[in-house]
Image (cartoon, rainbow, N blue to C red; front, side):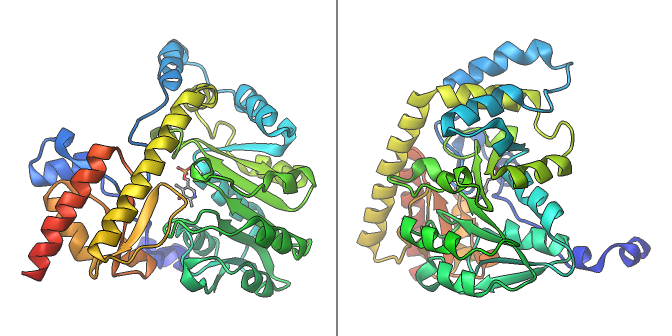
Length: 367
Ligand SMILES: *Cc1c(COP(=O)(O)O)cnc(C)c1O
């Protein structure tokens, strides 16, 4: 209790982030074989890491006694080339989540405000709270970000506006025209952050990197955790106007991204076949779930990412019932969506198993 008393109250009050339930933990608790468990709870890539990334990891193990390149030269150069930007535009992070935290370090304080959508990725709220800043939530009718409403909410204290596109957990997107209009309305004291963790899954995605080339106060976040299948290594990056990147670089730990992650990420960029296979699997999986939900009369939100939000009546109960059958999905009560679960798209076999178990469980509920 005494330690509580001296800690920052706003940190003590924080409700910690609840990640997808790990396979090993589930296997232990249920006495099941880990290999029999299907995890569709964290939007991971069911195809695994890219073959070229695995090879790069094997090739670098003898160098693990050496500190990483703190400047991430090779990976940042490759990313600069990929996006036609300069290295000075690129900041690496221990997952793109770390860059969210770095942005808060650099721009938030107790007087500052961060704006996000009502059903935005929950990490924005956690971070704003952690820095004692004011979290401003803007309604998102039909689960779609209202960029006009978000621009209207900007005050002289606003420092950051977060737009996840597609958003997690809703899977919805805003359009190029909406983004263009929004960026035009940004005052100079506000940085807009476009969190594009699911960018690779989107067909005809809006171009936000052009705002960086134009020198706008914009950060585009991307990650190797989703389509590239490297969630376990923790690596992502921000594409930023140089004036923003320079500040973020000062706020990070000297070796914030590890050597294995840098090598695997670099190799993943070259493995275009693996990304193509991943997108093909996801397109098929999204179509499979849409059809399955349509046939069962279940309400769902049209998704542009690698997961689907579906209304099952009681999300916590469905999560618990499916867990007993070895299928892990994500309950959404933490997002104030107690009726819904979020299901990640997996392989054909995983998706089929998921719907089989969903059918069993929902029928039991009716009986
Ligand atoms: C998964 C996700 C991230 C990325 O997380 P990492 O830290 O890169 O693993 C960022 N933003 C959103 C909206 C996500 O869903």
